[in-house]
Length: 168
Ligand code: NI
Picture 1 (cartoon, rainbow, N blue to C red):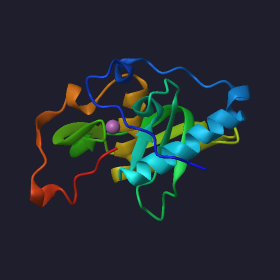
Picture 2 (tube, rainbow, N blue to C red):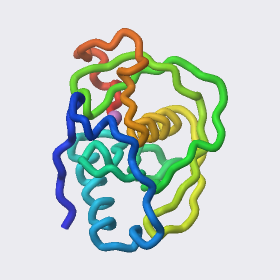
Picture 3 (tube, rainbow, N blue to C red):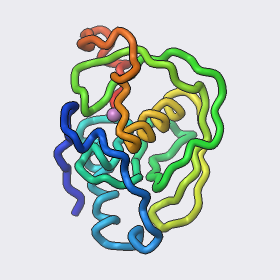
Picture 4 (cartoon, rainbow, N blue to C red):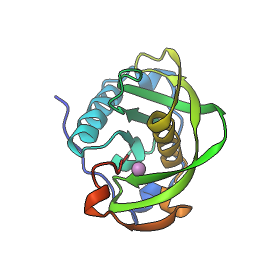
């Protein structure tokens, strides 16, 4: 059974570590498969549109994403690599590890990410908008970075912008 794991908050040193690549043998391990299930459960419970393993105290290069978009089904990406991106635009962003806050950050408008799925098969996902933003945010988590490191105007989220404030 998947269970909801606690999400680390900003200030916890585990959020600042560079996560380790996942080996092919490890992907098939029951504990790793459980981690993926738990990450989905934790993301949906938050709720958020993405979650990276370091946010649940696991220093491994894996994230889950579900941006509620028919073009981008829910996915897990292991050992993700940002392959292509284009011009940067300013976007509003939040993070489950920095609750109640939002800020403006420059992100690539579109992104292509490659990696492995939960069966260890190569995948390549491309998208724009929220999907691209979220992929970049999660890969930052795997590198020990938080959006607040370089965002402008980080502030408590106002009631009127809460609906559209996306956290991951
Ligand atoms: Ni985050």
